Structures are given as structure tokens and as C-alpha cells.
Image 1 (cartoon, rainbow, N blue to C red):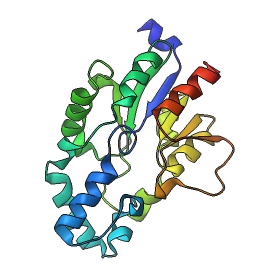
Image 2: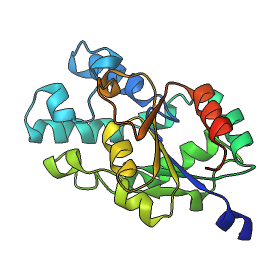
Image 3: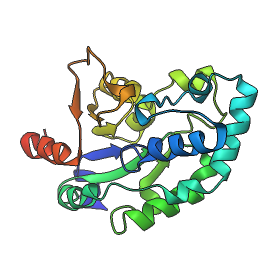
Image 4: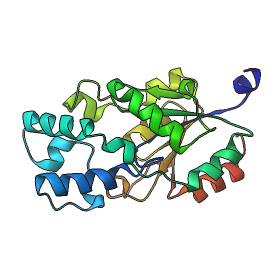
Length: 209
């Protein structure tokens, strides 16, 4: 445990960072609700994405999250080799926006896809969506939460979480090349990394700065 105190902490997101979540969500939506979305159409605001009212969005959300599909999410195999190298100098934790009622399925998925990398104690739930899809959840970011955890870095696909963390002095890596995170004017305090090779290159270049 003493070594963990000395090592900088990297807070890593799950959906569309460790898991190919949007891909599964879009396929499910197209098959069950007759939509014609592509992955780049994805928006975490499902009410906005579906163009339905909050009640219908809540019903669909419950159906989707209760379907068991989260168990079948594909994982990013490239991340495993990167984690094995990073663990030598950094403490790795997961910080997800998922609702706490998804804890069991989420922890199970992480431990089965990334064995020996994360333990139960390494997985944290920010609680942003615990009240479902709502205006408050849509604008909230993980900045305060991961700051309290003492994180030094964040790797996330959502610009709001990276920007919120960076504003609190946490080094932010905006992960992936997705329709929802292709900002024209990305703040200079946020570094874009399109894949896990670029994540590793970032830490090799910056060391424990």
C-alpha cells in the first residue's frame, strides 16, 4: 500500500474507453426501436438522441440496462498491454458515471476483461446518472469526484469530464475519435489521445510530471 501512495493515480473511464459501449448501444437501439443511428451519432443524452420525452427515454433506458447486454460489451484488448506497463509507475483506478445499481455487472465485466489489472477497490462510481437521465446529470462532470480521490490524471471520452478535471489541476487525456468528442477548439489543458498506443506514448513522453 505504501507504493500506491507514492505512485501518481490515473482515473480511467469505462464506456468507450475500456468498453465499446456506443457500438453495442447503437446496435441495440436500431434493432429494438427502429432507429438508424451510426456510432458517431451517439449522445449520452439519450432523450436528445432518441428525440422522445423523458418518460419514454426512461422506459427505454431501463429496458436496455436490464437486458444484460452490458455483460457482452467488447473490450479494448490494446489497453491491457498498456496497463501492464503503466502499473509499474502509476496506480490505476476506474471512475465511471454509471449508476450504482449497475455495480455488480460492471465490476464483474471489468474483472473478467481486465484480469489482474483492477480489483473491486479500484472501481469507483461517480453517481452522475443515479437519478436517471436528467438535466443535472447531463451537465455534471467528474472533476470534483476524482479530485477527492487524489487522481493526478483522467482518461475519458467525454469532453466535459476532461475539461472539468483539467480546471481542477488534473492532467486530462480525451480518449478516442468519436462524433461526440471532436471539438474544434479543444482547451490546451486537455490532450487528445485517439487510441491506447497514443496513451502509452503520452506517459512515456511525460513521465511522472
